[in-house]
Amino acid sequence: ISKLNDISWNRNNSNERTHSVAKKKENELGVFDLMGNVYEWCHDWYGYDYYSLKKKVDPKGPKSGKYRVTRGGGVEQ
Image 1 (cartoon, one colour):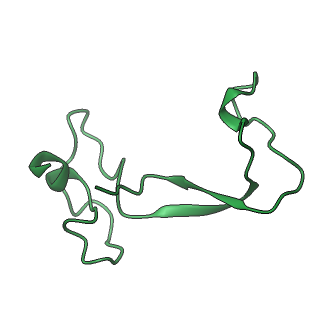
Image 2: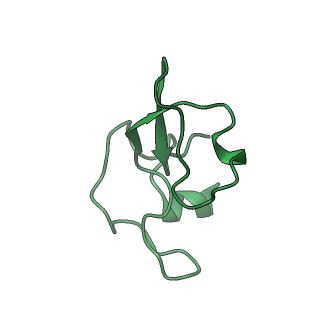
């Protein structure tokens, strides 16, 4: 957990607010902000089988629905 706190904003250290980018240490690959901080609420409709679709690059989800999806690096512990 402490290593995660070093490289990401999450429930344990964010005070439940967003933070500016590159304020944490880089990860082992030298990349900042790959996880944590916020999710992005997308315009896509939720589809239970979305990630099992054959097309892996920009798969098309449902044309309509009841729920929108969130994507991104929000970390909850």
